[in-house]
Image 1 (cartoon, helix red, strand yellow):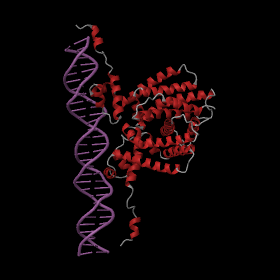
Image 2 (cartoon, chains in turn orange, green, purple, cyan):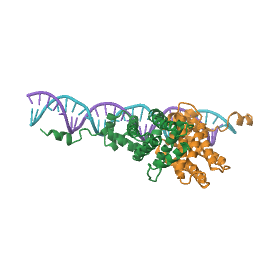
Image 3 (cartoon, helix red, strand yellow):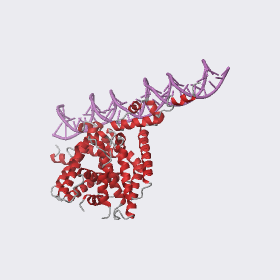
Image 4 (cartoon, rainbow over the protein chains, first blue to last red):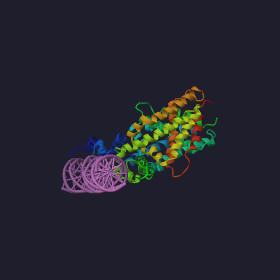
Length: 204
Length: 204
DNA sequence: CCGGACTGAGTGATGGTTCATTCATTTCTC
DNA sequence: GAGAAATGAATGAACCATCACTCAGTCCGG
């Protein structure tokens, strides 16, 4: 009988197939687009058979959903943690913006899926919009409202619209970064965005 | 002999089939998404047979391209015309923003195709980005640079980034408007966007 | 050897594209 | 000016390549 120890060390007893498939899917979707990606491509990229994919996901669509859900959950948790100790509204917004661009900037394939593939159908947009994006916009919005209460941001501004403007600016930074042939750092863009935004919304 | 006049008046000698197909495609793509739309759907929406579509377009993909090319050309022409007589950089930017939101706000289906469907693949994004969007961003950017020369906008700002911010903000207004269940006017958003943006980029 | 993880060839549906055929209109012919 | 012939726009049934998904079988750890 082989030693019990080797069993758990030589081979990961449960290789994280699910995770491997998800990571493979991100790569494949990023390169070919969701609709042009074959499940077979994902399987071979993950090093498993076609059928195995269906042991972990009920459909191709569910894979895309899972990518979104998983990433969003991670981002939200990380966000909550980092925002909790901050009280200054400006500081909060800066942290949000940083987290936003850091996350996308550190995984180009995931960024492509988020910026491009997840937008490619009103169906997804509506579903996801309802769930994740709306909540995200809400966080920005209420932070801006805190700033208005605190007297640092102009009270006459519509906080919801201001939130969309900030989000839109960050979003465009990310999209442009993905499409650009040139390779530059995404995170530093936060400075210019917030420079303009804060100047735009602050009381004089 | 039938009167020569009646020949040209009784029946439109050449009904604009091509245009009809394009308009139908915009409607169908907006409702189902590009990849979920069947050529047969477009044909029946346009009131022609499946095969007729292929007398005017070489493929389904070419239809999407044509929608983009045609709308972009229209927008650019209209834009040039309206911008020509304006010299004040702020006024120029206001006109650009207005045209942007007016055009999308006046045709929801076209807006969906532009905001959602055209983004749904890196392939399209890269092609189109190279052609249309880049040029558009360039116009905004050089207007901002004019403002910097004229001393109304802060010189230390990176004009390219500022241009992306303005574009991103407008783009987000449009996308949000499409996804929103509530029906509101898109054009007035220009005011808040420019209020914040001008305050953000102007010299104090 | 059992049970469950895994495989990958096969299947059925889908939908983009083609093309033989139709027929309204125009052009000839007498 | 009437009929015949030619034209080509339009049709839509059929074709067939493509995949998402299934399942009968294999593999392997214990």
